[in-house]
Figure 1 (cartoon, rainbow, N blue to C red):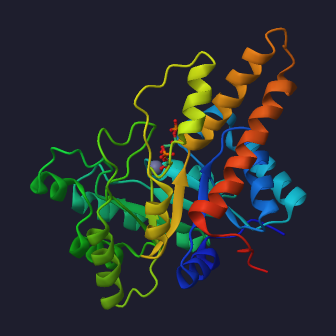
Figure 2 (figure 1 turned 90 degrees about the vertical axis):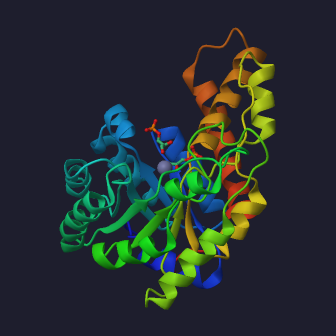
Length: 316
Ligand code: G3H
Ligand code: 13P
Ligand code: ZN
């Protein structure tokens, strides 16, 4: 068993209306928690690495630990660069054996985003690596945001078709109301499903059938984890995420990859805060890191059942 690209994963996911979880990895315990959770559910997985993670752990360590996870679990894993800011970061990870990259040019003007993304696609495809890119800017729908402000930020369905056809990307990250971090909504959670439907329909009509859509900023921010954090010395006020049922609905509308990092952070932090509160005399890192790893594994198993629907998604 070796690392795979996301191509086959997304094809199966689109056809069967589920999504593959893309979990951010930063250390051994996160990799073990995520991949053991996926193993328990016979699920494929995308392990994604931000530039911050590359800096923290070094690509050599991350690649070696992911190879070890494949040996241990025998599941299908894609190793993905998350929010690659430039060509150099893409080159670094491709040279280190990653199978998938995100180039994030969403903060550039449209034509610059097209040009930079195209260059990345040419480089990556020549080396058998697939490319995700982003159009639109992630932001929550605030109660007081008017329609024109939403239109300025969210992914435009016609532009999405133009972007996919001109860049040759393999998957598209869209902005429909999700956002990064633990504070996604001040009021009621809302995603722009009409926009998502229009993006999928227009891509299909333009000949991009079963084109995989990606949702960033898709953590649900479990109130139970917030409670454990706050009851054990934390101070996380007003945290809110995307409800599971909204994410499940998205998987029926072309979303094949759902990104989650905040939920992993919250689970690990809840576990460790509780551990130290219960055992103030403890100081062996294996004690609290075991708790964190177990919480992450439980989180991932629940995500597969309640959000992603990707149990038994191994490529076989
Ligand atoms: O999308 C951002 C991810 O949560 C990664 O965060 O850059 O702090 O590693 P990071
Ligand atoms: P969350 O902050 O919602 O976990 O999103 C993570 C993400 O999109 C990583 O790219
Ligand atoms: Zn993201």
